[in-house]
Length: 254
Image (cartoon, rainbow, N blue to C red; front, side, top):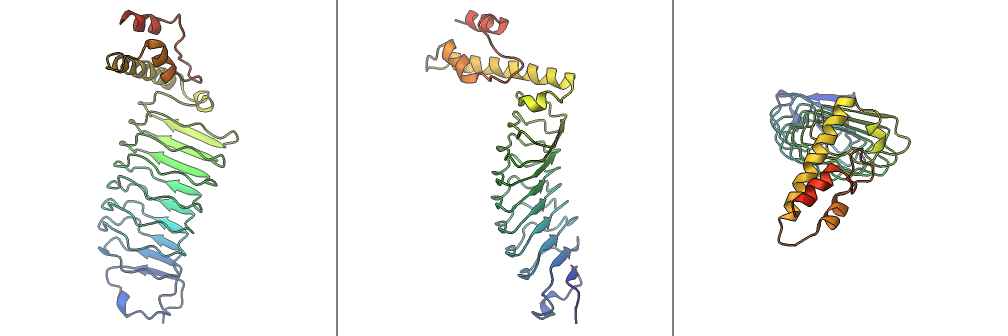
């Protein structure tokens, strides 16, 4: 008889011979040699599949689940619906995941570093507190940050173009090597290195010129005053004013 509320599921487990009473545990660790996870007990609160390179899909997740660890599940291509009770979601180095399902309002912490196929993140819950993203080489955008956010960590996401505004009382903001950025909010701009700030400003001006050329050469006939109004960011260090070299360059295209 299994008395503990913690069990390790591995390749040699006789899962099907366990009685319903024996399956009444809260913590489950899935061995890295397991290829297919069977139906999960409804009592599970913590599911840990870290280090499993074989599983491509997860079964339906129990409504009782509060913590989900998928660290290193590199073959996982999609996820089922996340339960409304989930508080912590760790999907580090799930390199085959291109998207995440809708996040439940109960979620407080999301860790998705090393997710090289991830393009975007879903909407964050209103009471969300920690976001960790890094080495996400395909990530292009981030959702709006909730006012409850306390920790924001972003590292080496070269395709990320914009960082959203941060809440007033955020505790920790840290990001480095996001070399594709064209815009950051004022709070972050005051904390980054001078070199990174120069890179962001250079990217921003390049993007502005690309946008200008695109709209100027379009068949819509948009004049440059409307174009500048369309792309202007009031919080930028580099802004186009009527007497700047960039505007003179733009006018010369007419």
